[in-house]
Length: 160
Image (cartoon, rainbow, N blue to C red):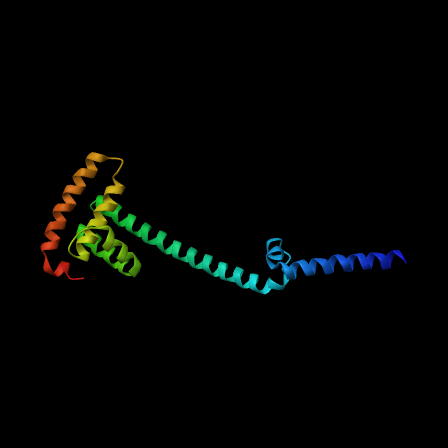
Protein backbone atom coordinates (compact mmCIF):
# COMPACT_ATOMS: atom_id res chain seq x y z
CA UNK A 1 0.00 0.00 0.00
CA UNK A 2 1.21 3.39 -0.83
CA UNK A 3 1.65 6.12 1.71
CA UNK A 4 -1.21 8.11 0.20
CA UNK A 5 -3.68 5.25 0.54
CA UNK A 6 -2.65 4.62 4.16
CA UNK A 7 -3.00 8.31 4.99
CA UNK A 8 -6.42 8.40 3.35
CA UNK A 9 -7.57 5.35 5.32
CA UNK A 10 -6.28 6.79 8.61
CA UNK A 11 -7.93 10.15 7.95
CA UNK A 12 -11.16 8.44 6.96
CA UNK A 13 -11.16 6.33 10.11
CA UNK A 14 -10.40 9.39 12.24
CA UNK A 15 -13.13 11.50 10.66
CA UNK A 16 -15.57 8.59 10.79
CA UNK A 17 -14.91 8.05 14.48
CA UNK A 18 -15.29 11.79 15.15
CA UNK A 19 -18.60 11.80 13.28
CA UNK A 20 -19.74 8.77 15.30
CA UNK A 21 -18.82 10.46 18.58
CA UNK A 22 -20.57 13.68 17.49
CA UNK A 23 -23.68 11.72 16.58
CA UNK A 24 -23.65 9.61 19.76
CA UNK A 25 -22.77 12.54 22.06
CA UNK A 26 -24.11 15.80 20.54
CA UNK A 27 -23.10 17.76 23.64
CA UNK A 28 -19.47 16.77 23.05
CA UNK A 29 -19.55 18.34 19.60
CA UNK A 30 -21.27 21.47 20.90
CA UNK A 31 -18.93 21.91 23.86
CA UNK A 32 -15.88 21.55 21.64
CA UNK A 33 -17.09 23.75 18.79
CA UNK A 34 -17.34 20.87 16.35
CA UNK A 35 -21.05 21.26 15.57
CA UNK A 36 -20.61 23.08 12.27
CA UNK A 37 -24.15 22.08 11.27
CA UNK A 38 -25.47 24.65 13.80
CA UNK A 39 -23.71 27.64 12.22
CA UNK A 40 -27.03 29.05 10.97
CA UNK A 41 -28.48 28.96 14.48
CA UNK A 42 -25.37 30.61 15.86
CA UNK A 43 -25.56 33.35 13.25
CA UNK A 44 -29.22 33.96 14.16
CA UNK A 45 -28.34 34.10 17.85
CA UNK A 46 -25.51 36.53 17.09
CA UNK A 47 -27.89 38.74 15.07
CA UNK A 48 -30.34 38.73 17.98
CA UNK A 49 -27.54 39.72 20.35
CA UNK A 50 -26.53 42.56 18.04
CA UNK A 51 -30.12 43.83 17.86
CA UNK A 52 -30.47 43.62 21.63
CA UNK A 53 -27.19 45.48 22.10
CA UNK A 54 -28.25 48.23 19.70
CA UNK A 55 -31.59 48.60 21.50
CA UNK A 56 -29.84 48.76 24.87
CA UNK A 57 -27.41 51.38 23.57
CA UNK A 58 -30.29 53.43 22.17
CA UNK A 59 -32.15 53.18 25.50
CA UNK A 60 -28.97 54.15 27.36
CA UNK A 61 -28.57 57.24 25.18
CA UNK A 62 -32.19 58.25 25.87
CA UNK A 63 -31.70 57.81 29.61
CA UNK A 64 -28.44 59.80 29.60
CA UNK A 65 -30.08 62.54 27.55
CA UNK A 66 -33.02 62.75 29.97
CA UNK A 67 -30.65 62.90 32.97
CA UNK A 68 -28.60 65.62 31.26
CA UNK A 69 -31.72 67.71 30.57
CA UNK A 70 -32.92 67.28 34.16
CA UNK A 71 -29.49 68.21 35.52
CA UNK A 72 -29.48 71.38 33.40
CA UNK A 73 -32.95 72.24 34.74
CA UNK A 74 -31.70 71.82 38.31
CA UNK A 75 -28.67 74.04 37.63
CA UNK A 76 -31.03 76.71 36.30
CA UNK A 77 -33.34 76.31 39.31
CA UNK A 78 -30.51 76.64 41.85
CA UNK A 79 -29.19 79.66 39.91
CA UNK A 80 -32.70 81.21 40.14
CA UNK A 81 -33.07 81.30 36.35
CA UNK A 82 -36.32 79.31 36.47
CA UNK A 83 -39.05 78.43 38.93
CA UNK A 84 -39.77 75.28 40.86
CA UNK A 85 -43.17 75.07 39.15
CA UNK A 86 -41.61 75.19 35.65
CA UNK A 87 -39.00 72.57 36.53
CA UNK A 88 -41.64 70.24 37.98
CA UNK A 89 -43.75 70.60 34.82
CA UNK A 90 -40.72 69.90 32.63
CA UNK A 91 -39.84 66.83 34.73
CA UNK A 92 -43.46 65.74 34.32
CA UNK A 93 -43.17 66.04 30.53
CA UNK A 94 -39.84 64.20 30.40
CA UNK A 95 -40.98 61.41 32.71
CA UNK A 96 -44.27 60.89 30.88
CA UNK A 97 -42.49 60.31 27.59
CA UNK A 98 -41.39 56.94 28.97
CA UNK A 99 -44.23 55.11 30.79
CA UNK A 100 -41.97 52.60 32.61
CA UNK A 101 -40.16 55.57 34.16
CA UNK A 102 -43.46 56.88 35.52
CA UNK A 103 -44.03 53.51 37.17
CA UNK A 104 -40.63 53.84 38.85
CA UNK A 105 -41.45 57.41 39.97
CA UNK A 106 -44.79 56.24 41.36
CA UNK A 107 -43.19 53.44 43.35
CA UNK A 108 -40.15 55.44 44.51
CA UNK A 109 -41.84 58.50 45.99
CA UNK A 110 -44.61 58.88 48.52
CA UNK A 111 -47.49 61.19 47.85
CA UNK A 112 -51.11 61.37 46.86
CA UNK A 113 -50.66 62.46 43.25
CA UNK A 114 -48.22 62.08 40.40
CA UNK A 115 -47.48 65.80 40.59
CA UNK A 116 -46.50 65.51 44.25
CA UNK A 117 -44.17 62.70 43.26
CA UNK A 118 -42.74 64.88 40.47
CA UNK A 119 -42.08 67.60 43.04
CA UNK A 120 -40.25 65.08 45.21
CA UNK A 121 -38.29 63.92 42.16
CA UNK A 122 -37.13 67.51 41.55
CA UNK A 123 -36.25 67.95 45.23
CA UNK A 124 -34.23 64.73 45.05
CA UNK A 125 -32.28 66.06 42.07
CA UNK A 126 -31.61 69.33 43.94
CA UNK A 127 -30.49 67.34 46.98
CA UNK A 128 -28.04 65.37 44.83
CA UNK A 129 -26.85 68.50 43.03
CA UNK A 130 -26.05 70.24 46.34
CA UNK A 131 -24.72 67.24 48.27
CA UNK A 132 -21.26 68.80 48.61
CA UNK A 133 -22.75 71.79 50.46
CA UNK A 134 -25.05 70.46 53.21
CA UNK A 135 -26.11 73.83 54.60
CA UNK A 136 -27.19 75.13 51.18
CA UNK A 137 -28.77 71.75 50.47
CA UNK A 138 -30.90 71.93 53.64
CA UNK A 139 -31.91 75.51 52.85
CA UNK A 140 -33.03 74.56 49.33
CA UNK A 141 -34.90 71.51 50.61
CA UNK A 142 -36.89 73.66 53.07
CA UNK A 143 -37.56 76.26 50.39
CA UNK A 144 -38.74 73.71 47.80
CA UNK A 145 -40.86 71.74 50.27
CA UNK A 146 -42.64 75.01 51.11
CA UNK A 147 -43.15 75.74 47.41
CA UNK A 148 -44.38 72.18 46.91
CA UNK A 149 -47.11 72.69 49.53
CA UNK A 150 -48.24 75.86 47.79
CA UNK A 151 -48.21 74.22 44.35
CA UNK A 152 -50.15 71.19 45.50
CA UNK A 153 -52.90 73.41 46.90
CA UNK A 154 -53.38 74.81 43.38
CA UNK A 155 -56.01 72.47 41.88
CA UNK A 156 -55.00 73.33 38.31
CA UNK A 157 -51.41 72.33 39.02
CA UNK A 158 -52.46 68.98 40.45
CA UNK A 159 -54.31 67.87 37.32
CA UNK A 160 -51.91 65.93 35.11
